[in-house]
Image (tube, rainbow, N blue to C red; front, side, top):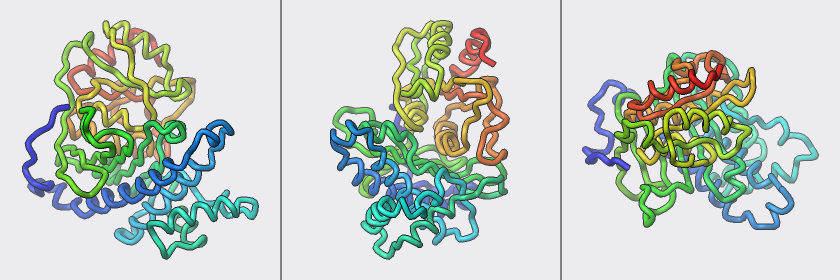
Length: 344
């Protein structure tokens, strides 16, 4: 991990920073609070839950995380719409009353004023489905299977203005603050356009560290990462791409936008998300936060054809196909290898 000297707590010497400092602070506080809820729930998952394939803990965490974040955004920016993954329709069904009760109980641990009605209303603030000149996008738990396994997951929040990601906060409760083995677990990656990318301790105490992508320029020396689940990224295609590049290191597989974080702090050089089937379209909330964090750390993010990700098409990246994330130095070689494999 490449760490730059810390020149101050996000010195606002750029125009974007002066405008977005409040948005940054609210986003950081929001994902920290949601992460606390998720950690409480994940800590209670036992072997019996996994044996029964009971997904209720991640469902409770998903709804609770979205409720808390939308609550904070509504208080700070009441006119800002939010494009998020969940809505409360299922929770409002009479048969789901026990599930709603569990969600409310978890939210009340951090927001004592919460009721069933306010929780559903907070969740439904995330119902934006069409492009707006300014909006937030949220994935309340990215990496649900990782969450259930006790492994990697992320809480991803980003602000988009005129189709560009301007602020990002990505909480990764199970990643260490630095790659060092003795580093405490829990980190929030934060970026403001034009201000660089930073790693904050998940707990509020501690100084943020500025992060940068790796300096690896030889594709054969690259470490790449990809989705844990083969349903999310074509592992066989990625293996062909790696072979063309001469990469011999096995891929690092993990869930969620934590993969973006590994590239941003130089722990990995590439993240390949190869299309799994014709017509599959990525979602905005699965990439917006990570894309800005990598870009502000000095990396590059495109689709498999080298096109910038389009965040102005509603909930989907309808103009893009797959995703390639790199330290920038390797990007051209990766795109050439993908073209050579014949991915379309």
